[in-house]
Image (cartoon, rainbow, N blue to C red; front, top):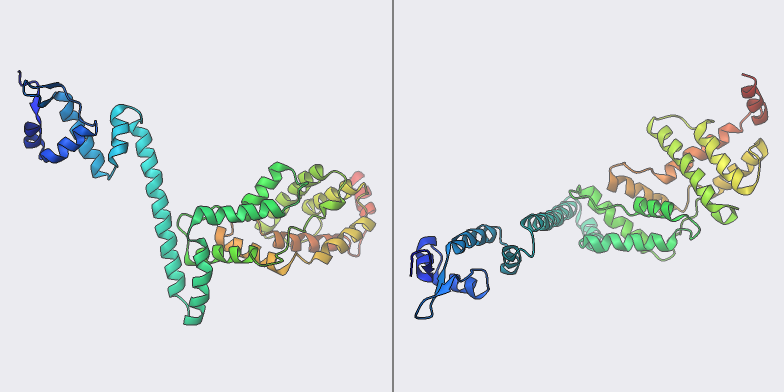
Length: 316
C-alpha cells in the first residue's frame, strides 16, 4: 500500500481534528474513502485533505453539516450558500436593530407611557407577519374597482417595508399604525368617490397624474393655488363624470372634497405615522388632499371666470 492514502489516525494527526470527529464526517459521507486496507480499515486519498479544509472553513462560519454535505456533493453551489447565509445574517441584524429600537423607545419615556408602548410595540416584533397583516388589511379595504397596478402601488405606500435600521420613533410609529388598522370601525379608503365614476381605470390614471403634480408642488414648497396640479385633479373628476371643467363644476367638486375634510381623523393620523416610518419619503395623502382642496378653492375665488381665463390663454 503506497503513502498516497492515509489512515484516519494519520489524518487526525495531520489536521488536529479528533479521530471521533473525522469518523463522524466519514460516516456522514463528507470524507470520501479511497480504499480499504487488508484489515478492512478505511484509507483516504488526497481529496480527503481538501475536503477537510473545506469543512473546517465552513464550520468556522457555523454552517450546518447537512449544508456542508450539499456543497461538497455539488448539490448546492458555494456562491448560493454564501448568498443564503448573508441573507440570514442580514435578517438577524434587522431583528436585532428592531429590538434595540424597541428597547430605546421603552427606555425613553415615563413609567405609565412605558406600559402603553410595551403593549403597542409587542405587535411588530415578528416583522414579516406584521407587514403581511398591513398589506392584507389594505387589499381588503381599498376599492375593488381600482386598477391592479394602482392597487399594488397604494398597498405598498400604505404598508411600507419595515426599515432595516429604524429609529425608536420609527419603530413606535410602525407599531402604532398596526393599532389603528385593528381598531373596530377603522375607516376604509374614502378619498376618490370612485363609486360615481363612469370609467374608474381612466379616472385613477388621471388622479395619479394629479397626485404626482401635487407631490412636486408640496416638495417645492409652493402655496396652494391654481395651476397644473389643480387642473389635472379637476379634469380627472370632470371626465369621469362626463362634465365640463367650468366654474360651476369646480364649485361642486370643491364642496365634495371639502366635505371629506381630509378623510377620517384616524386615517389622517395614519398618514402622519407613515411620515415617521418612512422618514417623509412618501406622499402624505391628507396633506396633498388639503393642498388640492385649498388650491381648488382659490381657483374659483373672485377674479376672471375660468372660461375667460381659458379664452385669454387661447388668444396669447
